[in-house]
Length: 300
Image (cartoon, rainbow, N blue to C red):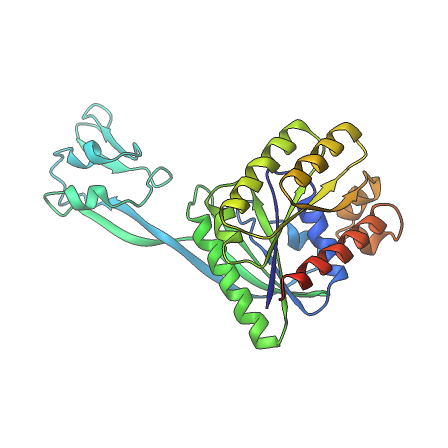
């Protein structure tokens, strides 16, 4: 089974638009949106949600007031400043500790140090994940709740479900729209994948973030290729990206010019490949052809 992960060092490079087009160009695949903090692939794939499942990402603490003796040890050991103390003047004469659920990291330090066992520690629902059907195949995506952590755990869950779905339906390709950056969710996205495609653009910030991402994929010895989106907005930086990739022995698989049709396709809720057949669509098709060759070389 082949697992292609599409990532970018920063947001706004056009990664999701490109994945939408790859969804239209490829066959026999499962689609996954692992950008769980800002999932939007489903918006351009005319999806129909078949199943919604709650995601339990961890535990949170809360104080059992009738047991609490206001010793303050929980506040002392909390590294996330989640435990607050209200003085008697704030609460009409009642001294009280309470836990800010948005700041609690679920580390359980307060639970371990409370001498009165006055900290409750329960699982919390951190969001939802969905199985949807699209004209291009099944799509797994998610919505993480506000101020909820553990996005790496949710990414791993989505990839696991995608493999199960691919086995169940006899599909041999998984295409993942990965999160931006180089943090935990990205590592959870690329670990064990067949191939990583980095989408970048000719700007200094995008180039810098692409270099950091390449360091990450090199560290994990991941087969990697590069696609330069909006490649004609700065030819000098495009050349610098290509030269850098060449020195790193990484193939530049495609150069996609700026095309207003991409934005128009987004507004109409579809991929640019389905919206128009010329302009950027031609370059995306060529890039996909190069990418298919890379995937075949990896013996998948």
